[in-house]
Length: 261
Image 1 (cartoon, one colour):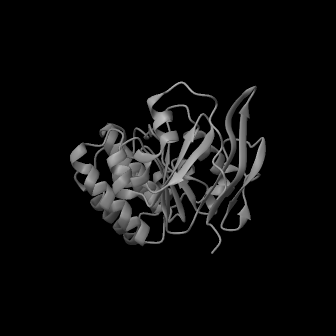
Image 2 (cartoon, helix red, strand yellow):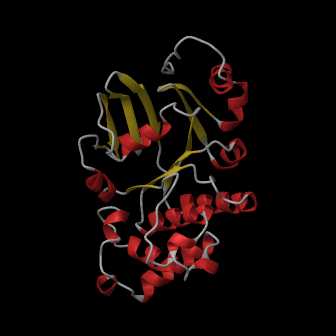
């Protein structure tokens, strides 16, 4: 079976700074893959590349068999790739429920829907019902009628996931989904993301909470200074010397790329 997402030798440079160096990884449909690494290892840059916001210096990215690295971000979004961010910004005048409903029309990306006037947004019963169900699943029903900008940082992260799901994505990219989320809700977030997978959505997750990763992910890819150094099950991470060296900050030479198996 061919991979849903395939990065082949992806290199990204900003001036003389090489942020990703020959990164190769694949994600099969229905997988939940953790993208790990110390701060500055290139994780967010990899998501920027997948979504069309970081031009490649070398390599290729394919999604569902189609090469996408030359496409604009809105064309990539239309193919079914959605991303949440570490610090999601929210419009000041829209409620949580209104924002989730508006996201359903974001065929050119969620941001585009925010510029539509309220009178032109479809407030039909089906859209409202889908949005309400997602908010309930993510424990946001109690704040559905509050201004989206007024809710907590953790609730904004959950709302970002709800908005992405309203677009019915094939691939959902999550950038630190537990950041700011109350520890008591993390188990429920894992359950919600597992249910999202059962709806046919593939997930790639950047996360630092290793307990969350072990409970959620099928497989992990670890980056260190822009190089993929490990591709393994979450339970194998703590026994991987290269991963431990990267996280402990032990002085060592530039990381070697992961050898093809």
